[in-house]
Amino acid sequence: MKIIMKFGGTSLCSADKVRNVSKIVKDYSFNNQIILVASALSGVTNSLVRLSELVKTSNSEKIVNELEKLNELHTNISKNSIKDPNIENEVLESISSTLDELKRLLEGIISLGEITPRSRDRIISFGERLSVLVVTGALKDIGINAEKFTGAEAGIVTDEEYGEANPLMSITKMKISKTLQPLLSKGIVPVVTGFMAATQTGDITTLGRGGSDFTATILGAALSADEVWICTDVNGMMTTDPKIMPNARTIPQLSYSEALEMTVFGAKALHPRALEPAQENKISVRIKNTFNLSGSDTLISNDQSVVRGKVAKSVALIKDVAMVNIEGAGMVGKPGIAAKIFDTFAREGINILMISQSVSEANISLIIRRKHLEKAVNTLEISLLGRGFANRVNAEDDVGVIAVVGAGMQGSQGVAARVFNAVAKKGINIRMIAQGSSELNISIVIKEKNCENAVKAIHEEFEMGTP
Ligand code: ADP
Ligand code: ASP
Ligand code: MG
Image 1 (cartoon, rainbow, N blue to C red):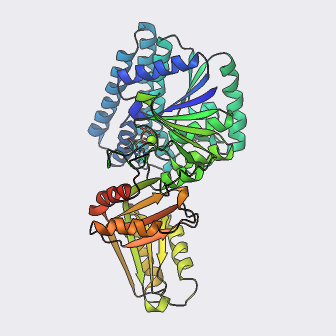
Image 2: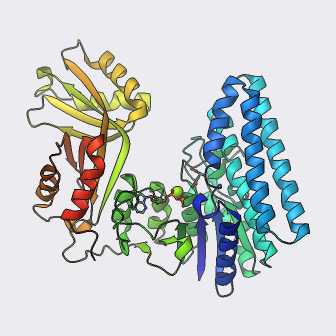
Image 3: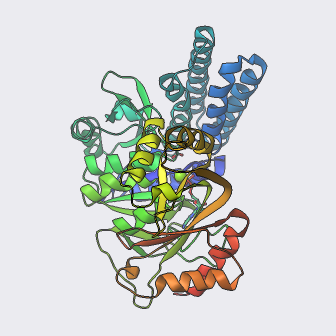
């Protein structure tokens, strides 16, 4: 089989874990062609994001500190996961020269006095550039013929949407099959940086937080892989976040659309856009536990299997959201108000996660990311108030969205009522409701402090914890 194996930061954050990953690759590479995608080590991308903030303040002491911590982390893990002194020295030298390059980049940005989305992407791409050095070294150390690539070198070409770049799939497919395909038949294991790619003119871009999953499926599509494995720290996609509900259960199988609804609504185990290249090219994606590879896992494929008796498969929670309510008798029967709101938000780059309008039309409620709240209220007030459209815009920043997902909900009656009852029985008030037209999900908005209890109540109501 040809398998893309992506290892997340949590699978790589100590020498033991790096050795575990190398052993997995060794075991599987006897009978399979393996392409490895590595994320940055846990916490490293956050540290680089901090550095990209620190350059604005030119606080050189803090910058030197962060760089020193990055050096220590990568050096220690390399020293403890690589035995051969020649390989170890080579890796340590590469870490040091990569960090020097990062330091020079930061100095350049400080002297220019401004950081652009383009230079920010260059900074945050260093996490993966450093992690592949360690991983490639550890693989070579146990006799694997491994070769490292940045996403750009491998051939991933994107547009110029820095921070959330989109792959240009036809050129990307062509380039990747030229660079990586010939290596596979020679028994070489390519090790590719997740998350980072480049524009057609060679400027570095990133694919959005959690984007190494996306890298893995882009490679999967380009190389017509049999499977893409997203190896993480839990047993696949579960009925809910196991950190909230310890009896959360692995969902053995999901269709692309069900998995997409889950990821869009906060199931962090997979980057939502990662399913696009997989679905388009019908590549199966497995979510597996790096620390328990033979344990239960989730297969995401074209097959929309409805497990009998299970109408709702999973419940997810998104916390960093806010609700905006627009009220006014002037909105009744007047066309174009919703369009005006969407237009205002689109111009400001504010994404709407949920919308609901009462039948009386005197009220529209929207859910957006919390970081956009102030800008959203200000721009709505300017464009709607005092023009006869609406007479009040108010906001709540202490809410969360709970999304119940499952293909069995399509056309099945009474699911919404069961969700509402389960939550009501706990004395929790629902502030807003929406159902996607796909009928694959029902979402409710409640006060943030009640969210975890509501997730538990819904998980119990639909007996998601039992097979
Ligand atoms: P990685 O470093 O491997 O990319 P992430 O932290 O991005 O890992 O994603 C894995 C985490 O996602 C899990 O540790 C788990 O807490 C969280 N998570 C949230 N919802 C779910 C869910 N429904 N199923 C599985 N994991 C979930
Ligand atoms: N390192 C990146 C992040 O932390 C990408 C990833 O981990 O998938 O967002
Ligand atoms: Mg992730």
